[in-house]
Amino acid sequence: MMFTSSNDRKVVVLDLYQAKLNVEEDKFTVVLLTAWSESGAQEILYSGLIEKLLSDGVANFVCVGKFSEYLHDEIDELIYHFDEKHGTELVTKVVTTFHEGEALEDSVNYFIYGSEIHDRGDEKLLAVLNLNHSEDSKVVSVLKSA
Image 1 (cartoon, rainbow, N blue to C red):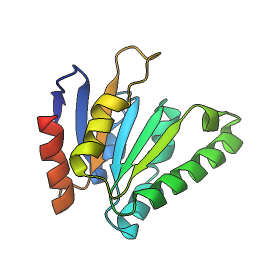
Image 2 (tube, rainbow, N blue to C red; image 1 turned 180 degrees about the horizontal axis):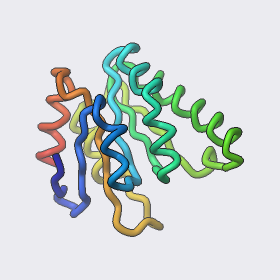
Image 3 (cartoon, helix red, strand yellow; image 1 turned 90 degrees about the vertical axis):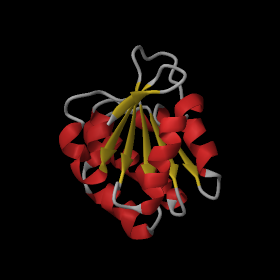
Image 4 (spheres, rainbow, N blue to C red; image 1 turned 45 degrees about the horizontal axis):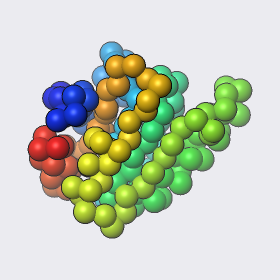
């Protein structure tokens, strides 16, 4: 699903289980990831999606949910390993934030309005969600109203 936010940013919502297949078609600058449980965060980490997004030039990972700090810390570790493997310095260029304990509306508003990357042209935002999870269904509703 894709829509345009009130500040004219294109937002794409993909299900976690299909995201790695579908990110081939687009380039994204900012990605929202949810972590409502440790196992949910691990699914994201072990899917290979983070490495794919880093290769494609994602500049900002916004982590939301009860285990978002854990997900954020693990993404930072993946960035360090990615740099070692590829001889890059993404650790100085990629921003990761976590929004644990914040109102969902505030976290989504940061994703839509506060995560702008000024030196990127046509920005696209990606929200990778488990669309079968009740909390992620709420995220979709908040995204659509932002």
